[in-house]
Length: 495
Image 1 (cartoon, one colour):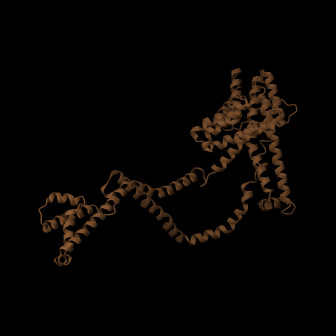
Image 2 (image 1 turned 90 degrees about the vertical axis):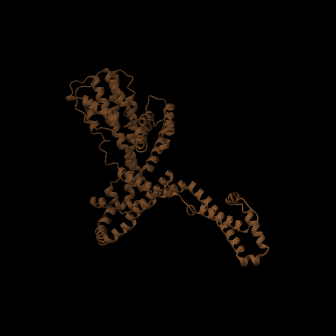
Image 3 (image 1 turned 90 degrees about the horizontal axis):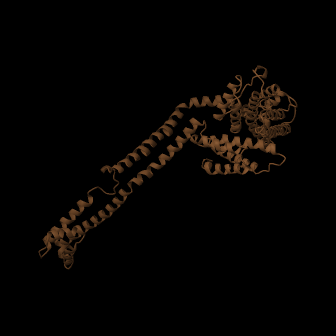
């Protein structure tokens, strides 16, 4: 647990005064390893009559191991107890929830032959179980806080005085008026917190979901038979709507666009986007040039520079041709009969085609300049679908669910971090100091556990160090509040 930093420091402090007894050395080594791994390792403490000696140093080691067991048992059992209290409180809040709880617990009540109406009995049972869970959780939260405060207060005392203070703290937690270390060890192994694994819990999955299981047993075989008879239709449906869809998606919307994007980057000739055929503009422009030059040669009464005329036509200048055309319009009937005017009109039609091809060529150049953008846009929807599918498959394989509990973990972490900050703002002189200290340890443990599901694994050592400082009693309250602020600034992007 995250509060085991104190146990590790205390073991190091005792080690400076002497090593543990041979019988305790494996337990101490196991505790050290479990704390460094960030998990709790249940221990089986030996009886004191099996130890080679009973000197104060040995008893300090045993007391510290008892403290390790009790605090970790509380931090493991109390959060589920609070969750059970919230569950029963929600269950008794509305009549609908009461009826659902009555249905879920009907077999258990029938088995125990308990009388009572279905709507009246669950209400009283819910109230009773809520009060029991709340009483248990609050009592042991306060006991945990008192154990942590009084046990750690012995650190500055001499070895024998420190042992007596630790024994007093353990006796208070275990409700032993006057007990020696042997009795404390025995009661630690059989503490009420450890034996409450099922008493203060949310009802089991079997209790809550047996109606659903019963419906599955009643209608499941019939549904399976119907599915078997429809297997051909189901197979055809999956082939047409899943397999063919996936194959078409990958080929038509991933492979082909990727191939086009790659061809665009390589400037392949076959990859260009075009509105008109390649070479159309050149052929039509050359045809216009030849038509104009021949027409001017046949109808001009003056000599002209043919190379200059070709250059003018290529630049769109038809001045000499238009002068001849204007002269033809003075005698339109004769020129129409001879065909000269018709020829002039066809040349102008060819000029219009050249102008249209020139405009389309501009559009082609614009499309080619944006061809890579078009390819990426065509690829984006397929990539989005593949990304969503792959993330769902990853969660299914790793988390076990298509939709993980990240949002719920974020909410729990935010609530626990807020509660920890609120508890640190309380005055140390208030009456519920032990309860608040125990509740702070629970909230810090919850923050730590929820953070492990949200913070990247590479940053777990930093996360462990920073969260442990919230529960470090050696720091001032202001310093611990500053730690919470640092956690928000450093890890806020993860939750």
